[in-house]
Image (cartoon, rainbow, N blue to C red; front, side, top):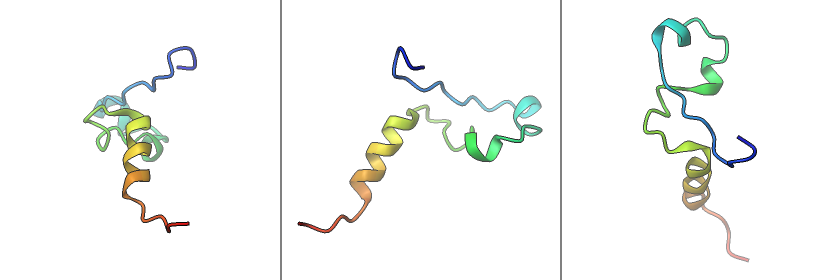
Length: 53
């Protein structure tokens, strides 16, 4: 991950994911569009109402 700068996709698999203690952090169903963390952060920054300086 560090060398490529890409986060791995979170592929939901009920056999593994439903019993995993990290499912709330990973959120494989929510990230099924495979846009990655960088896209999420960019969209979040665009949608935030930042005051003009």
